[in-house]
Image (cartoon, rainbow, N blue to C red):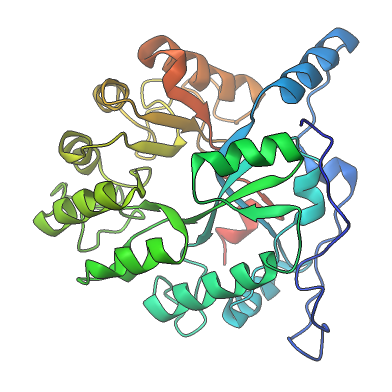
Length: 334
């Protein structure tokens, strides 16, 4: 359907009264220039882009497509309310047909500043599902058929994702509960180790735990996609070896192109491709730079894209920008 999306003008929680039903916050006002990082194109290139968008299903493997407060310092107060504001209008202008929304992450901190708590996760998920139920442009995506339906009807398929399994703790049946509530992808670890495995920030790499193995197999049985974006190299290798289904690295890049912890080594990328997995190339500030250019740009982004395509094959490389409608760098400073 391309850019002909059937967006009606709905804004998050329009069915409620701001300041009465929920605490009012001043959001950063978006302009058309904020809706995309624009790269100058020739007329011929523009036409080619529009043709690609119109004729193909466009999927974003990793995003945080919510609105952020005008003042960065108010972000923590907003998070504590447990109510994220999906950026419906901005999304309607992207040409996306499907977005994987990693809404339940370390910012889900209604009851704890440390995030990742079970009750906070369920609360945030319920609020978002309630909001989505009050409009018709975004549909809750649970199957591949939903993505095709969104493409054919001018809608956006929204996939509910947890960026880490930390809230599962030692309760494997919680994965079933999450699936029942419509979650279709989950990261095993977010940088700091949990009961499933080692995170990439740790000094020692213990890999996937026995419980983590059981969780991977349970996710396989349920049909929940396993994401190893923020895990250690050994945890990624163990997961790829253990999984009976394809695994995803939803947002990262090549460690050969940019040798930092956050990027992925060649052996893991090759193993990922061998089991039918996919990597989404990340565009978040500071990561997909290169050895020769420490400032990320469209050129450094494409360096990661082209390297991974050459190494893994084009069918195993996609886009996982990991961007948002606000000051991404500012969030790191909170």
